[in-house]
Length: 352
Ligand code: SF4
Ligand code: SF4
Image (cartoon, rainbow, N blue to C red; front, side, top):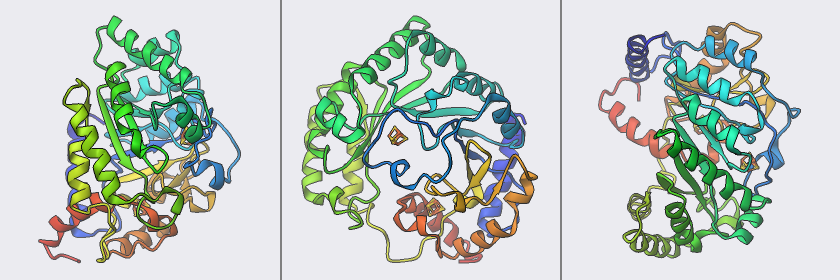
């Protein structure tokens, strides 16, 4: 599907959201595909350690191609699931195939496996964005959080940055994705300094989902303590070249945007996105970790039968009224994004 048809799909999709349609003519715009659920790290906050209930496996290139060819309107493709995507040797080929179709491809990676040949393949693949999971610049804290050494990650990043420069490419954009939790919130400045030193394009901090939810006391932080650390980071950032989102984060903290609203907020994810496992299992989004959350299998069924099947239509019916009743939705913090859309849709007073 070329870009014009993608635009038409986007337009129809938005209309269908506003009208609260449960059977959709439009296709999903944002898709996440899992190339593997193998991993070379063991992060303490990762659901992979506790919730994975499918065998460990890989997707091969032909399977990936079959899946992507069934999804003609994808605009954004995130190529990873519960695992390190670079463990799949065919990943650069998958990225190149999707990029050739005009899809914006990104991955999340710890970069520990990047050597020169892989760096070349990644730069040449057309990969748009690589988000590097970087929860600490201190090797001891990094190891405590991610169960792995920081050194191979630093080496991998340096190789990738050098290759990108040699090839005079500005892609992939390299971001640090830093999850703020109790173990690291006092070291935000060190992450900024490391990002600056490694010539990272953006350091993006994000509080862990359970930060103030009271679900996991180990990750709880006093809001005022975090604000103080964020302010310290902003001050330091003035003397560095690296871009970061601490200013925005501070505004959000002060506006209490991370607090779950009392009002029931719809979730529009089942209208726009899907998460596909390496074996073809289709889930609503990446917050669902169990095989029993599969709403179909894209390798075994006609895609439109899954996308407009009984299960997902029932979910859309409930979700559009703010009844996000599925267990994974309780700890999900995407309500911030949904609130903005909800407030716009509310003006139409069509079904809410
Ligand atoms: S690298 Fe990613 S998938 Fe692997 S354990 Fe850490 S968070 Fe989980
Ligand atoms: S509320 Fe969150 S977990 Fe539930 S479907 Fe929406 S994005 Fe996914």
